[in-house]
Image (cartoon, rainbow, N blue to C red; front, side, top):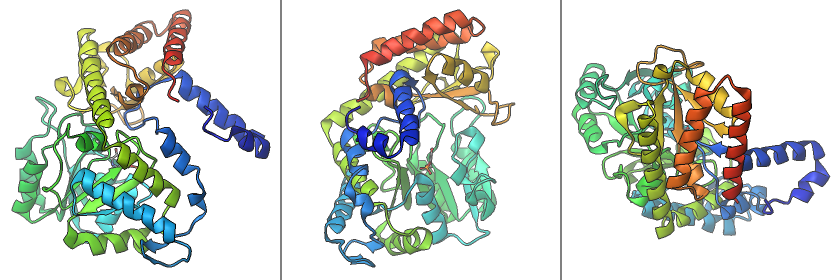
Length: 415
Ligand SMILES: Cc1ncc(COP(=O)(O)O)c(C=O)c1O
């Protein structure tokens, strides 16, 4: 990995360098199936390590509270314009430090403490910031949740509508962390308008597909759309909030000075670069492969007796119910770690187990697709997973699978 000034880090701090180096090697030698991660492109990494990290730029382009922002201003403007074009939205704020802060800006701008919100239950696939009691979203607001239809494990809009009519939320949230099916933004907007609620689409996971036209756009159906930039979008860690023009002023003043101080300009430059790359045909092809790899992974696992939640996927996420295999998500995560396959335990809809055990694992294909893996490699990965889980007590077998995994990784270096 020559992009890093490894020597500079090593010279300054051998201890931290050692851990960075270990992490680099871990990433190189691991099949990463964490659905919310990706390998950021080299220009994105370089921008984040650039001198822009030195600059304070409180405020917005051409209206800052610091001098010396004449170049920074251009970069932020470019990032905003690219967001508007790529996602076809009326207004964009590229300053949120994370997806959670993007969501927080919407809540803080348009809700009062104690107002009611309706989002998907965390255990069914929603995110912490969609009303979980351990998050600000569940602590400051009266949060109600919808889940999925037990028959097909997909969203049942009759139930969402009933809940909306019953609780009259001020804000409805759609867009998820562990729901692998397409989101029908239009259906949500119809329900929101029936009850006079704002609609927020959180496209953190599916932003890459939306950008590539492989998932329906939330626009013009939503009042607010938030995203992270580091998942399918392949950018730096961070967030963006988009909204209708009429909400722009309040959203901007809530992001800064409402909940954040100075923007991370090195990250905003990296967001701008990622947005440019996301508008290319290469990116479209990449997203198509992320999707076809996920669909293939789901069908191969199903053939081997695994139960895929909702019987498939429309995205990069494959949620696997491990109850038929008699292991829980925590055990599976630990077994797969032994063979250098990185996944996360995940609750499945109506999970009888708590979040620290879970009955499932969530798999995702953005990282392996970035590495250039395709059909053949997905077949190998599925066979490694199956072999590791079925031979979980055989340390010798696990060691030999680990070597095969490392060998595969060597053929597809991320950088
Ligand atoms: C749907 C959704 N929204 C928001 C977030 C929060 O992003 P961050 O971790 O950047 O705060 C995530 C993160 O996984 C997510 O899945």
